[in-house]
Length: 605
Image 1 (cartoon, rainbow, N blue to C red):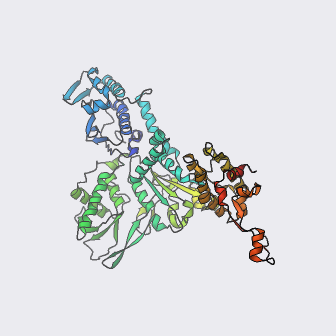
Image 2: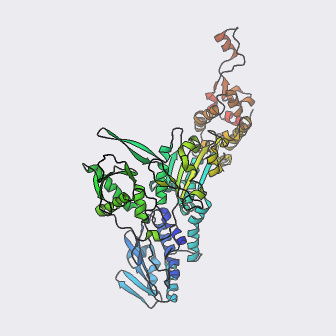
Image 3: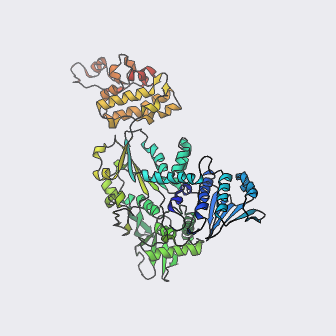
């Protein structure tokens, strides 16, 4: 990469999705002071964006980078081959944020002068001056207290880089119900997409969840649940029927997986926020909805065509060169975005129309020209995460189809054995990007690991998540040891059934905030007992054994009791009727509010 080495582009500021930074050869790599100045510039940007994530902006021009805070600029950097100029704001806002900036008057550099009433210009013409400026800004911004600026850069850089390297591209969290599989996908996702934030606020679940929700809104993280009716058409792409004045037509609609792959493919570390592009597309949609007819556009060669776009991931194309009212030309908004961000036409279907669409956005909706020469630079793609909940409940062969091969790390775009396929409906060439991480969850009570599609098992890493009764070690309700209760229940389930059908700790976590016998009774009545009944196919005797009823001498403490006594059976059926071993059971609701009944699970009397 010319000018900025790729590791510095992973310093973490873009992970927050707050800064739209486009650096395209701003600084010449052969600059005499480049190595020194970048040691303070990049930690400064990271420090500002982490401390004031919603207020910091960065503006890049041909030969300079400018830092803003709430529309007030703080610093401006210009680096030439034999000279560097740094402008430091003297405004009240910058001095409030960084009081030590006022000490700039004492900086022992000959070429420092007021550029105007509100800023200082510092012209650096020697390595000694450059070192002084680096030291001054490091101290004034308090970039680090115990380590050097370069160490800070290394530390910040390694967070994102190591998280991406250490996280498998395809992983599945599996275990019994209630073990926190879906809960932990949030932490897993942040450890990939924003590891610095997770490291700083991992102890605060509210902040972690809020950050997760932000990334979902920004389309960095997606969520989908598989079920028996989920299909290839929902996941990858399919045909959608449309009716226009009674005329039926069909269009190709991308599924959630293809949409996410397209977005991940068109992202890079220089730019992750494409708000300007999205706003232009939204304006186009509003214009189409208000118009009485289709919108007319032109290709680069001057050929006219019309489009229909009412939102979504694709738009219909109607070339003037054909008289057909349904030419079945469709193009992808993701491809328009990709062309805008990268300038590359590689892999784009219906290229001339995509290009014409982009030209129209620039001409009519003020979409500014993107920084040139994108395709001539390396890029470090930003990570995206797609969470597939209950992945084992869907028919994997039907849902993934031919793409099950493409999700392998080595088969992904840029991999050692990269493969692509032509999709059956759109006829587009398609590959899975290497910056898309797939996290699945799997309930082993629904389908055991041994029954999972072998193609899925071979391409995913599996992380077991079992009940952790120790998380409940501080929970007591009316003298009931909840951790011991859960541990005993699960040990009996393992003996009577297997470990894949145990009970997760999350069922009992509400007791941490509400340690009452009434809350425990609701948990048992509405969650635990129905789950055990499902596990043992309403074999009430075994359900009772799991709860220790067979060891209790006091009938009132049993959760499961016989519904009919011998006397009531005699009255109902007469003396000639024989039960032949039949026993009818029912729940003992009174036991649900009796603390001794729960204690009897692990300490039978």
